Length: 261
Image 1: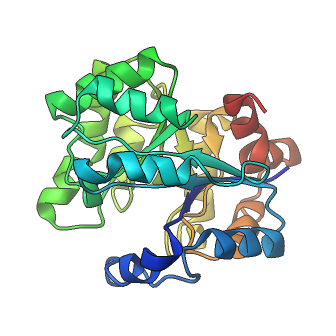
Image 2: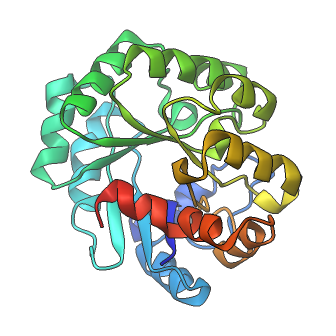
């Protein structure tokens, strides 16, 4: 089984608008719609994907969670959204009301910081409710955005909310891999494998050693769809030189266990 932990989706009428605002140098490969994701999954041989929805403003949290909560769940697992503009109780209620058990946090695009006391309060509430949090970590925006979500800030959040079920995207530090290796690799989090435009741009030995140092059972496959080609990302993981059981665990087994599939 292959499971993608990291696929962004938007309603059909806004997907093209949102993708037009993505950072320069990260051109989208696909259209960001649910239909586009399912078509891509079929072509790449992906069985399940976590479909991530992000609200940039508190005022759109409720309708974003209503939308992502209605997606077809035979192939897709919804990951909803939270925002510090709402109370912890309001955020948790929005997820519960829509049957959502995972959340995507994005310091770059939501203008939220790991160190914000309101964010920490929300993370405590999510931890108490058993919600899994998936988050971008590292660079990709301006200096202020990068500071909000860097590996140093993530490590502080891990220490502040040690019971949080956390998946750190981009090996815990997009374009900040040295810092991630110092502070996040080995920490009580799951690491995810995406690195747009492709994980194949990283040194395979560095990635292989990082995975084994963190623990193969605590690494999950992700693509950052639609910013990468999932078939190419699967091939890149298979080219790392891992053992077959290690490869199978990363490509799907570990996330299946986390989600109780």
